[in-house]
Length: 116
Image 1 (cartoon, rainbow, N blue to C red):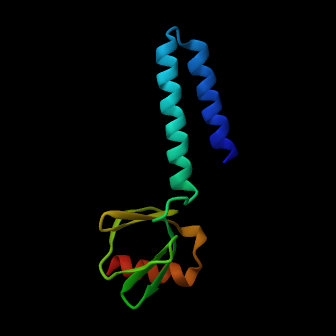
Image 2 (image 1 turned 30 degrees about the horizontal axis):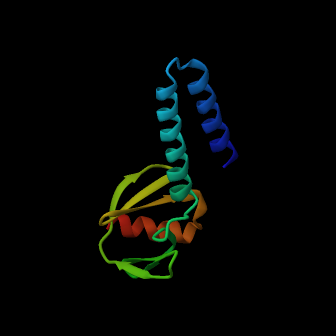
Image 3 (image 1 turned 90 degrees about the vertical axis):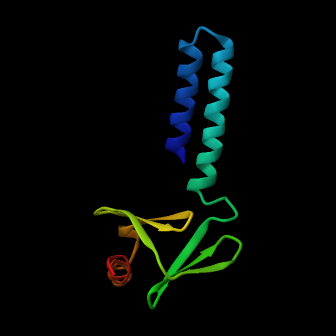
């Protein structure tokens, strides 16, 4: 959070120091503030439909959002997978998982689900 604030403040300073047009500075500042607000909603899970937890049961992925609604996805699609990160496509939504945050048992179960 602190790094994000520092980067956005630095960008605001650069916009106001190196811009010769006040209208352009105002427009770029407004865009930067909207981006910071959007970033906070998505990264810090402040949206009402943000997925807070997921579990694997048999061959299905069950998610729980911030409002407490459970959704079951019998068919998931791995959009991206690397050594540290997995992005799973759940229809129109995406679920980003950092592999080091999972226990080894859950990681092997997740790998079996994605590689099936």
